[in-house]
Image (cartoon, rainbow, N blue to C red; front, side, top):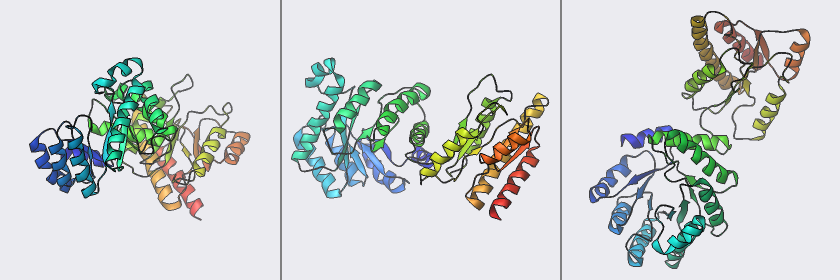
Length: 379
């Protein structure tokens, strides 16, 4: 139960639990009652376990009709699911295709995955049961993408996306993002699971980042940051890590942008203005404006002083953002820069900046300027 609560807190909408033994099925009633999110029972090879799971009140069952014990057993499970009014997940996996499709898989694994899935669909349709979703997972990302695209063109049913056995936290996250993200960008997919050899919380975090990157769902802030480059004289990477970790505490959806701009040489707010317009076109986004925070405020002084100033500065940024958004639904655009003249000042304000402040910056002064911007907006 602790693990279920942890993934729920991390943002999981559903949780799937393996039920390989009788004692696992016996525990389901308690798990279902105490779980903060719907529970899906994962059943292999044993129809009686699926029946017990349905009786225990699970929200859905995941079975493979091809290995559950034959058509008679499948019919028993389908009847129980119908009676309980719950859906099922069916489908194929590249690691467990039926033997009669092995030859096809040698020629085209995507074709074999789709053929296996369609056989299961046909079986359930004959039983007049259509409350199911389908998966055709593969470890090879191009195969997985092609299989899902082929299947989506052949069936009207919801699809469950995933790259099976994707690997460790780093490599698996990349493979899952490419595979799942490509399909979601095409409008394919209804539920998803990121499969990692890691803490399940990491799976949830990667899944949310995929959805946020595509603008499909929102959960917490999004941080945009400059890459490391020769113009970085403040250590953007270190600042970005501090900000990203601090932002995990906030459920509100807003964007924080850390740009390192060279005054007088960059196109200034052109990129920011374009991005802000894109945000305003999406009604589900909460902020009315992006808040670019150019981290030049700690570019001078001894190394220890920079570290302390950075920590205080980032806390001030987050506090200012939250106060601003709560009071005004407006995120202040304040530029921190080392150089300023009348032409640059005019350009900044015309492009949408609310204020500017020169470095080196006292974090308390920065926060005061943000609060002053808020008061002007409210007035």
